[in-house]
Length: 140
Image 1: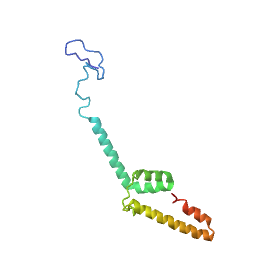
Image 2: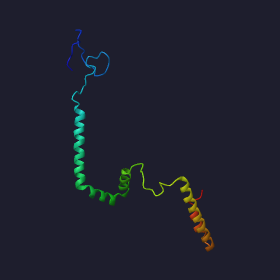
Image 3: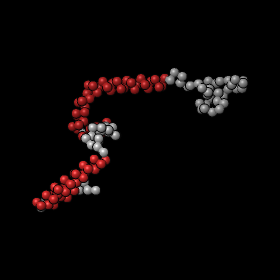
Image 4: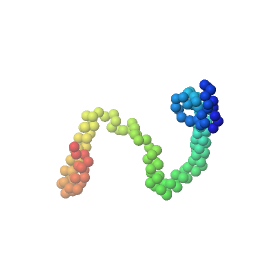
């Protein structure tokens, strides 16, 4: 490395350390080692080129590749599909979304009454299996 003379006239160091130590003559406060920011611009150009080439390839072969993946590796296909779905999915068009808690409770009670009535009718016919299946999901 080239030797630099210190401003006070003392002999220059034989090797300059590239550390941010106080008094280091090679490190000038506020001066960038990469003033043109070439590395960042190079990365941006590379990323842009990769994305555009990938998009072009997808236009040509994307649907065929997806179809082939679906046929050859169903698990990977499903994993990709699930990864594209948002973690929280807002469903605003629910038929129950406009109901109050009291209305929902009334609907649940009506469903329980209908199940009890169906179980009673099934008991008369001797179907105990039907009874246990109907009541298992709605008991409180």
